[in-house]
Amino acid sequence: MQVQVSRIASLPSRARRFLVIAWLLASALAALLFSIPFEESEFSGASVTGPVLSVYGLSTGLLVVAAACCGLRRRTTAAAISVVAVVLAVPLYVYLFLPGLFR
Image (cartoon, rainbow, N blue to C red; front, side):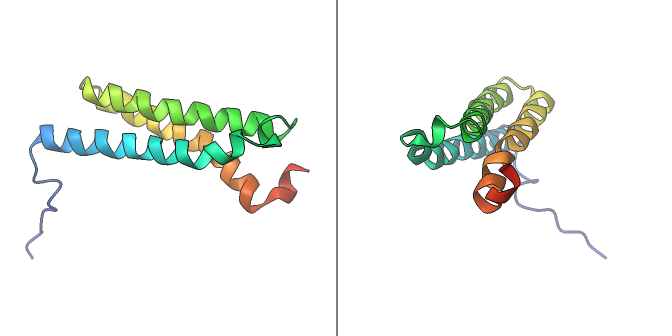
């Protein structure tokens, strides 16, 4: 049985690194655009939702830091930072889908 190599895996390492950087920056931009309506409302000043939105903003910044680390050839560091960023973004999504958990 012949195993097919995916197109991304067959790319040179420089092209793969560029794709990862582009993906991380696109994720950071999407997170920033998602959080703008919440920052302009009273959502950001409340006692429960304010810290949740602050942590979400931190995760957006960490995605940019992960992209910079990936550009500096520190892929394992970038991977760890991006995992932390994703974990920090989860509380906002949980609040939006299950607000009863935060009461």
